[in-house]
Length: 218
Image (cartoon, rainbow, N blue to C red; front, side, top):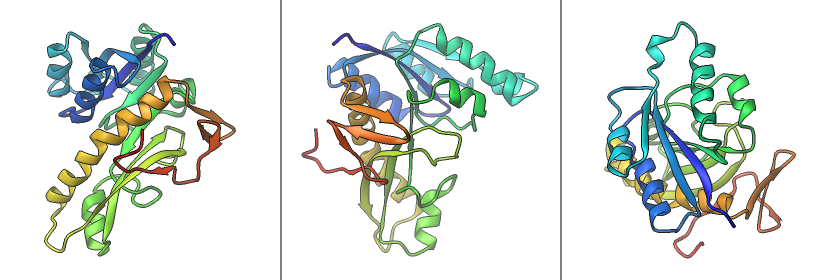
């Protein structure tokens, strides 16, 4: 199967982008990262892309008068690479419905909670305040509902009594670096498909919360 083209959207440090880039270089994902695009000039993820000889592009959202104008410019830039998959890796923008529809079925996001728990921000703080004992991360397809698209895979971590939002974030991030490349690999190998809001992996329909990750899952 020919290698797929991936475009990654980022806003910050880019550790998930780094995990994806390395997985592509190691042939764990049958794809090429064509570009890393950020809405923030200071995003360290752009440096990661340059170090890997990947196009690093900044489209500063603050230079646009409206969300729609920014999204349209972003869409045109993405489409120059003819991507098979668009990957949100810490992209801190709420995307317009028109933008989301344009990439329907081929845009993935990772969220630091066990969706549908804690959509939005401050997920680690919220989990601790609610005295949860389990937390985690979810990979999902992007839809018009914020963090509400169908889930592909989730990974869990235990919340210790002395965990802070920062220590919990570190635990969750380590799982994100494992499950995001895995889900992307499934998609690029044609194993993961979508049909009528359902996700199908290797011919089997996934549950609402996707697959629960373990280290032996490939």
